[in-house]
Length: 320
Length: 162
Image (cartoon, rainbow over all chains, first blue to last red):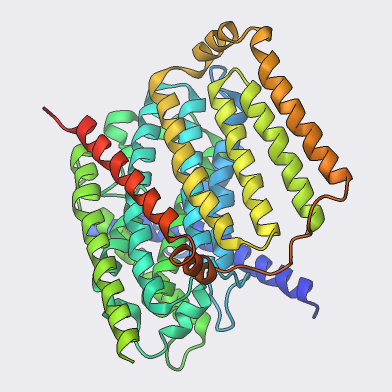
């Protein structure tokens, strides 16, 4: 098989797996939330209600695709696309298999950070272009929250880069063959998971779409397929943050007996379970608490962790 | 890679031109983002993936987001567009056009004359960039950090509740 054909196959397989897994997650989340709240959840359509998402998707697709007359049409249409493109683009550097990612990029980790920081535009454009106060409020909140927590996230990843000595995600996985980095870098791990939750705008950080204050936040004015794209982007984002956490802290596909993609999927599943669990358990932050927590707790912890890690790495290389 | 470089550069120039000429602030910022992305591709084509990634993270991902933030907070995009048009009569464009035109003539002239040195097709990784920053250009890095410290103190002063 030629290099191009292999690349295309890998892209196609990843795309199909992701686009099947993300809608499935909606069902998983609804069933799990129901379990946590002692309800049944959707269990009527198909076995265990598994086809509920298919029904929901069909309903969404057949709705009228509407651009409000007061909206700025081009940014309004482009906004959900940006989310889809950045999230799916970031998956190109995630090493699902033992042989690495679709693109073996030397600055893979930076590419992930770049894609997630460009993803902010989707939310902001949706808010500005919608020309509606709820969308605008949601977008302002989302943007402020995402740029604040991105810093802590980047710093927590920087300490991993210091230890592994590489931005290449495949190298980072290989470096964890003996010991996953969650053991050496517990603080970075906790900071990354919290910042990841905030980046995803999920409970308890779901202020941008706090339904009882600002309707649905930045996607208030969206309907049909464009709304579905935002929805899909959110669940793909969950998989992405889980995948990066798995790669960087849990040793990616490393593990005994089972093949690498299976281990990878199991670990990502654990993170997704954690995210859903957090949504069922924790109440929503107040907005000033959210900002204060990001800047006054998470950022200093990540900075301190990076400084100590740097000192230790220098001490070790000077000693040997 | 040379073709990629020229296509991306042309895109960057067009996007930068549109950034300056749009009267709708939101659209101008979007063209600016496009120009920054095109520059990142230029860096990538020149064999500097680390700088390309930083270009997107720092400029497109942080600085322009803050600009967009200000636009969102300050005024509706439609209103500011009307005002911009009044502030910028055609004669305001004369001097900038002359300067930009001179630059364009120089660039096209030097390209036609053989276009300087071809860039060696080597890839400069993060390791090399870091090593150079903290040896050859150490003074520059330190000066920049002093400047940033001043910015930090200023922001703290402005943000402090009295």
